[in-house]
Image 1 (cartoon, rainbow, N blue to C red):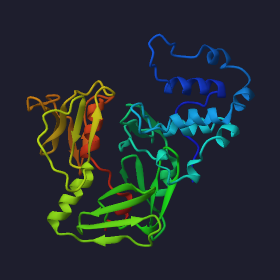
Image 2: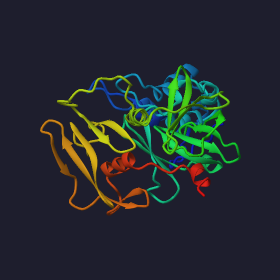
Image 3: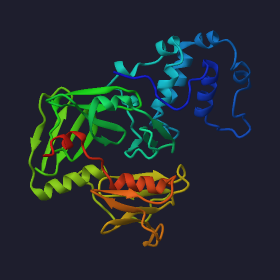
Image 4: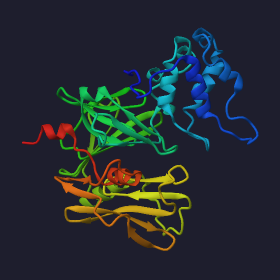
Length: 353
């Protein structure tokens, strides 16, 4: 169920692709060592067939470097991995196919978030790698075949357009669609995808009925729980901020080089060494004033809060807060929008009387 990569960059010749990919993943440990390998540079434009005969173990080692998530230099660049496999048949044969390894966590968008808005107006979705700061703009034609119910981290949660609207989880980096047997409840307000023992668990929170739906891939129906209202609110907040139930909350003195973005619907922490435009040891949040909202910043050390700008950053239109001001928007504005807005479920809109 994967699809061909739809990136803005045009595929290069194998030699050029290998040089570019190897250079991107290289970590310079010795400052006296050259950043690129002259031998590779000299042969980058030679016959394509020579690149297709590279040893399979070398090809696999380069490809696997894009998937690392446990090391300090982890990147989770699954999209690079997919482009690498697309260069030639021999490189595909030497590397693992995500379609045949759907339980392998290396192929999941573990450190990606989806900025839901189409800020450029050309139908492309914007994905952000929170480990590296890399932004990927990608047109995803698969979304046209389903109702988009919501997003969860780097996944899209979808529903079949035909009744009974079976649930789907779409990985935009590999193009794979995880198929669930259970149908999506029509009044879903919030969805969450969790990896568990190599499989995916899908949760739906329905604010109108206060029900929580849970299903694994092969479950015919969602199991439904109806907790008391106070418990529902607590569980929902725990899922939004991605904390563990029972964790003791303590006052923070410092978060060092990190920054936290807090909103009504999502929260996330970022390394400011990767995002230099964001100030370290600060919490970013929004201050709501009727039909507008300001982005504020609170320094954890001195506990002082201030607005990012004097003018309002958002104006309310219907149920959403829309960014105002001149484009292009700053990263702080985009991330603040990500935390306070949530796209409406297209399936739920079909059931509105």
